[in-house]
Image (tube, rainbow over all chains, first blue to last red; front, side, top):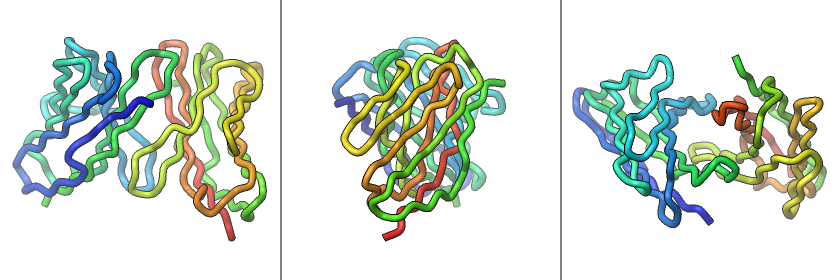
Length: 115
Length: 110
């Protein structure tokens, strides 16, 4: 089945630093990747949609200069949280799709804690 | 505003019984429908997806889709304590956007 690998699984960083999260599709080519954020006991919130080779589409209220998304290949997308602050602490999850009629596969998530 | 509605629960079901989870959606042109299970602190994992009216069975799980009434349900037979989780419904709408429900918390009591 489709496997999506996400790293790191946990990261603690100091306020003001940047953190990069990687999302890889291991056995399929992901034309589209999605980045979500989930706060405790809340549902998934879509942050942005990235298509290979083009700029990401950000949801309303998500700062594109703060959350940099790069989708340079069909198997790799990265999310960089720049100048992180404690309020950015959350569970970040990527998801990849191999096409419209297939299920969306999630990475294992990254627990970001900004201190 | 396209919506996917789920009862937040918690839904409490005795072990061995059938758990029934429901989801309604507003976009009549929606294409595909997904059920995910999410354990606390973990990423969602796909249980099943369905895109045709009727029932789709996979082991103890059955997804039911009724496009006329705009609802999709998930039945879990022979519920087990390990089924306790939050179940998320997701709908691929007519613009091929994935819309998420807020999830239903299911508790299976031994």
